[in-house]
Image (cartoon, rainbow, N blue to C red; front, side, top):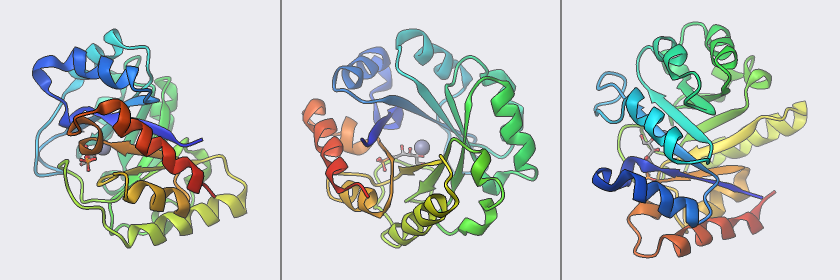
Length: 219
Ligand code: DX5
Ligand code: ZN
């Protein structure tokens, strides 16, 4: 199985409840909420209130992707509102402390790596994580092109995880669509996150089905 997360960054914010219900009906596995602070990434997006709201209107798990300079500040505030919390290794001086904060808040910890960040930076925290999110675009915006060399990174990471016998799942975020999804899955992705390839399509059910079809390429 490959799991699909719908990123509401490309949803119509005026109809957020309907937009969440649509992807729920289309069979996505969780909702991905992109929080940006205008410092770590050159954009602003959703805040804490949105994650509370989403949690209230759906039974689907939520994944809060913190693209902020000080993730530790927000983790306790997010407690109860996020099933998974994704933080960037580039923002983090003490990742073991951040992972523990997330676990203590009752959420599953996921670390994100920007495209140019090497895998070595997370070697020693890998087994403590629920997942690693491989960014396949520079973070900050939806609708960008998948960075192809990231397939090598996914493949290398998968081999390390398999060799060590860890449970850690590989998430992929950025430029995921019906062409890039099978390639990411073939390289070792377990979970795909998409904004444009879901919300910018006429037929959301078909869009989700086409991403799910990439499961047949799973290693
Ligand atoms: C980018 C965000 C992604 C984004 C993906 O900074 O982290 O989650 O919403 O958008 P698409 O799928 O359009 O590349
Ligand atoms: Zn994201």
